[in-house]
Image 1: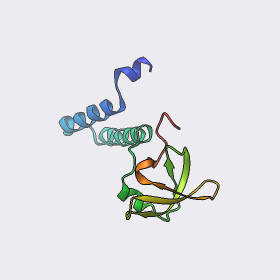
Image 2 (image 1 turned 90 degrees about the vertical axis):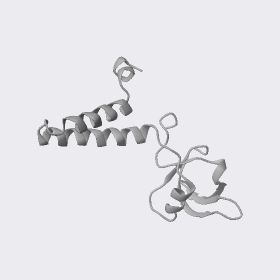
Image 3 (image 1 turned 135 degrees about the horizontal axis):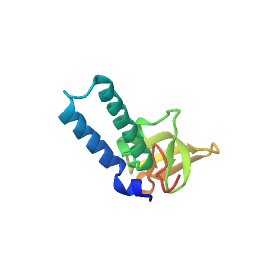
Length: 120
């Protein structure tokens, strides 16, 4: 980690810029405010990509039969979710990148929109 990264994390930058926008809103030009808002949005996207949270079971169910894959962290592969069953136990059926149909128990795998930074 370099000096700049140690000095301020993305989360710190988001908090500082948001606080600045809140307290100085009446004093800054509109174009500067728009630029700061854009920077905050970009930092949030970057933070989410670098430190994604695992999908919940409900979020995984929303991805059934979609054309966008999810990352299976333990299997270290991309997958297209075909079906998510809750009973008799939470289970996902999916197609991997080699078009093989597979299944796994929800609690035995971690599903993400993007691979976590350490695993990418």
